[in-house]
Length: 271
Image 1 (cartoon, rainbow, N blue to C red):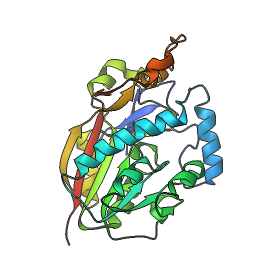
Image 2 (image 1 turned 120 degrees about the horizontal axis):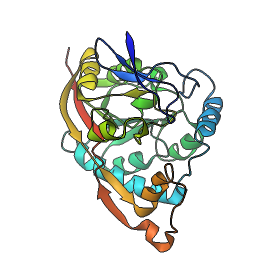
Image 3 (image 1 turned 30 degrees about the horizontal axis):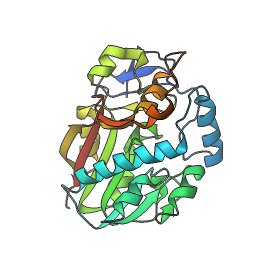
């Protein structure tokens, strides 16, 4: 790819550039190694923690509660295409989606972060590494939510998942959309610019990537998520110095659609 400079952001691990031939946008020169697969997982985890040391995290119980609500909603959308079979989640974290999906699917997970894997392996068979080295195959569904923007190579990532799908199987990817209005308005302060995000897709660039790997797009939807007041103020704390005390209001929950996330469904071509 021949890159041209787009912008610098204090949130990114390097300058944002764009391929002059295809329009794909990505971090051009990485200052740190915040992707899994090359160094030990513990080394990578420590670097990611250091890169995010100024960000406050939600309490684990609140992350799990919201994660379960979002998992139930994602599963309801997935059921419009597949309602059973073998399902693999790549980057399954603590296993919120696997825990919900196992009610209708035979579930498996991939998670290279050892801290997160320790929890998800209690829910499903787990491969504690990157998907490119996964020995399992023949899945009816492969799903991955907010992972492709973190990987070392989107091409090898999508290829590995496609190779592990049955012909006619379903691939589901959720990722930020850099063609969205929030990016156009916020530019370098877009909320999706965090140190371990390296690749930014729009509907055209992700469709091209899928087609290159034997996948046919079924639908690209702009989606929202469940959030709480606690989550909203947690994210705002990245930009503002002072935040009010939420007390009991922090768990007030609602659905929001920030209009910068896309959920992509595709099927593997036969033959």
